[in-house]
Length: 316
Ligand SMILES: C[S@@+](CC[C@H](N)C(=O)[O-])C[C@H]1O[C@@H](n2cnc3c(N)ncnc32)[C@H](O)[C@@H]1O
Image 1 (cartoon, protein in one colour):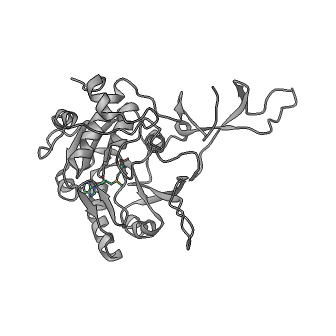
Image 2 (image 1 turned 90 degrees about the horizontal axis):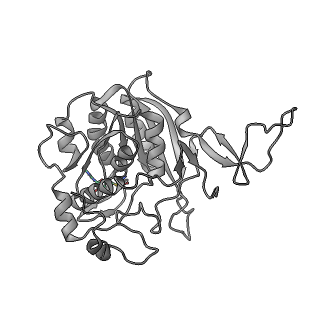
Image 3 (image 1 turned 60 degrees about the horizontal axis):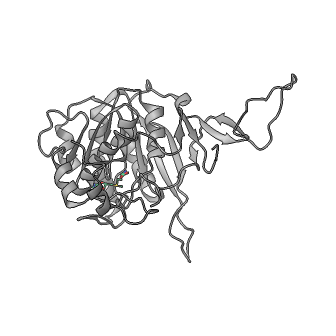
């Protein structure tokens, strides 16, 4: 039974018309808890698990995932509901990271890929671990277009995403992640036809290949329906790009630090199987609520008809 659509609950959840931030009432928590798993890992397909990945990962079968999307706590003080991640020494962070990275390697299929999100400080630490297990394919830099201003330093506006594969034989589909950009000057062929551009609702556009610098994605703002209370939620559009490029429909996608559930929600919207582990039951419930909502709205903001739209492109 779905709770989404129940007007009484919506009244509790909604704040102002513009603020779409998704929260959970006590009734909803009790409801969505029923869908979570806690100890039993005999059936993990399309499940959200509450627990510590470091303990759970070694119990998971080898070579079952096609894709791992990992967004671990960066090495900074950060409160995730009742759990506070406290900054530790580089050596400790590397040792902690090694303990889950090696298990992700083991649980990945031989032609599988993994993406790991990090900030500029942890990026170099993770690279030195990843290179011992994986083939490093690329480092994506995401300009996330929001960061805290700073008087005595440059505002941090980027995050890195390492793209690594278990073997040289990996699945990758660039045609599934083309970007529609606005064209300023449309050139013509000799016969007068448009050279590689189209006109949509009066706007000249071209579908282009994406690079490893991503400037077309904002963090979820509170006016976006995908936004939740999670402090470091990733945008659905960003995760959709990773999933579209590195998995096929029906593939199995895993996230060991699920947070508000973005990886699982996007996997479901894109017809992939999913499994995620999250320490905090509240966030795991949020994930289940988002999955429930996706049954009635599977749209991913900024992704239309198999194409990713550049920022601020208005074709309506
Ligand atoms: C950076 S956030 C992930 C955010 C997520 N990508 C999203 O879009 O919501 C990291 C999450 O990992 C969880 N976490 C931290 N340590 C964990 C562990 N050992 N096992 C499972 N989850 C953990 C935190 O509670 C937090 O929600």
